[in-house]
Length: 205
Image (cartoon, rainbow, N blue to C red; front, side, top):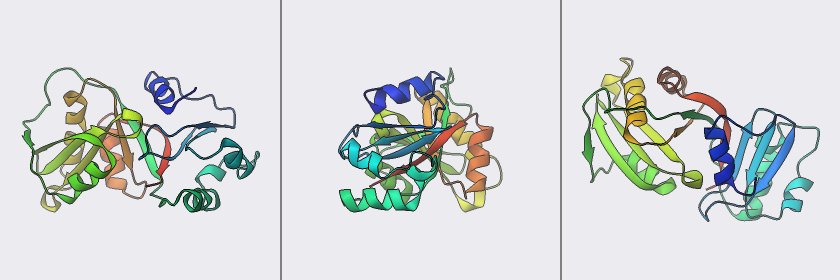
């Protein structure tokens, strides 16, 4: 694959990189987006750093090395970027018809979750409903990415699952999610909403 956009399009079609223990290095899809995605027994590094420099720092016999602190810190030092969280990367196909519950689109939200979404995504749109907030925008390599925030008083009632499901009705393309593995409630919500784990990802902001 020559680009991250092409590679992620293949993943959306159910064709992830071969589980061959290899590392694929591709250019950054934009000045904003650099990082690492680990699929099953294959890792993709998207950076504008010299590929030779990257490979020199990755032991050939260590599948975990691209997501481990020494390599990530070397990338951060070299690029002047900050290491983000290592997230579970999930993917869900679009669903036909309107969302299963009413949502109201808002254009002036100052919610911290929306502010964060706008730092990492383009064309962000925001809806509220079910005691929570749903944001969708174009993130890494132009993929559709979701962010969900449920108000404390509405947690534990399935609102997160419902909002995550609604996202699949709002855009006509697959939707990606990045979830902190320690946020077990969010992981359960996205799994229940039909998002399947495809890998792990860390971005360098």
